[in-house]
View 1 (cartoon, helix red, strand yellow):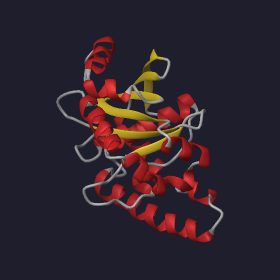
View 2 (cartoon, rainbow, N blue to C red):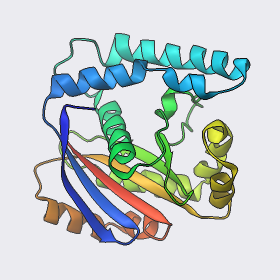
View 3 (cartoon, helix red, strand yellow):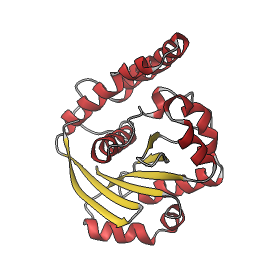
Length: 227
């Protein structure tokens, strides 16, 4: 996906990394994100017709809603409604392209949302068959890493990741699913970031109590998106 650049990629610890993304062309970024949402070619990977038809119906409804009400075809600026989609999709795409992790569409395209318990925003699998659960947050006036990390730990304590397994089982191998149940899992904190220099931002993240909790898992990726 074009329209953005990776400006920083830092290995904080062996299992913890920080990536910073700068959208260089907002209109191009929004256009490419909209194209990504409407690309339903991933549905063809399923062998059974009932799966393909079911995912097609659900994903098309979501894609149409996003195109009609959230990110319109000629959009040239980020809005409060579109911001978290931008953070989610840029983080997801970057991890897939930069780290070569498994390419899974955003959860909203294939999951059925449950009131008051929507689950994680996106998912992937690393090269060691460890599932990673992603949570994206946008805050207009400050960097949103605190909210993203706090939500991750809240979901982890509620076993939301385990609850999500039935929704994502069609996309992942059994080994990675079983690893998750055994506690071998990771998280991705995706968040909007302001003009804070990267070294200061990383230090602030490391002082966050939820970062400390999340760092105990197999992998943690923090993705800052300059919005």
